[in-house]
Length: 137
Image (tube, rainbow, N blue to C red; front, side):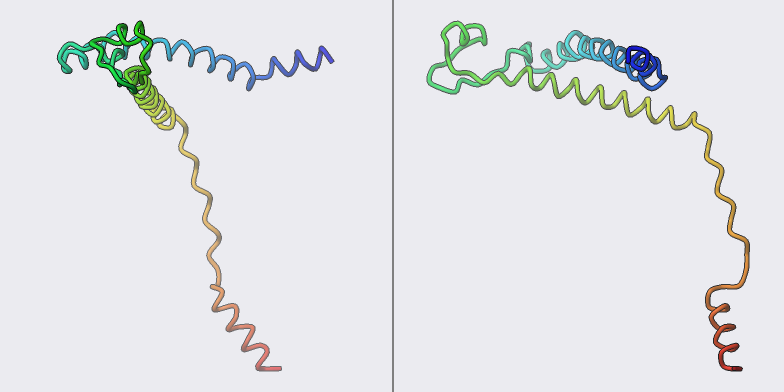
């Protein structure tokens, strides 16, 4: 059984899948850093210097200047800034994967077109012949 398991793990599909998962995890870290460290500061600057991660709604009563103050007060809050950042991460990752797949498809060999069926009589012509043969009998 151990031998079979080792053979299973060494199959090309499993190794390729493991490689893809590892590279995908590393890629997510890169994209998250791009969003967090490059894109979101620009978005924050455009929003008047606010950090997008600090965006929140107070669900109960009270008004708080910062997310930290609301959390320290124990207020019921909905922090939507992290969700906005996650959406931006998702869109960027989706776009990059789309571009990679598109580039991969261009590199694949074009499948040769299936040869055309040999030209012969059409279905109508065959039926007409059958009809004529039956009429002669």
